[in-house]
Length: 85
Image (tube, rainbow, N blue to C red; front, side, top):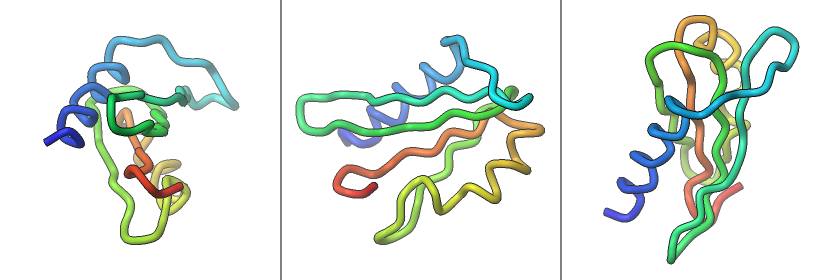
């Protein structure tokens, strides 16, 4: 349940915060700190949010190739699940 709350918070941040410009692609990075965890996130692109969660023992880098393509049409959000990355 706490992870779901963090994901909702990340979506809200990605929609309502400004982003920096990097080679024509907007990108925002940071950490969400909760009572139990510190979660790294990256938000790239603009448009409707698309949340990508990594598998197993991976981290946000798992999605780098896909983020480049998806961010042309969506605001892509990747997070490091607590204990990873």
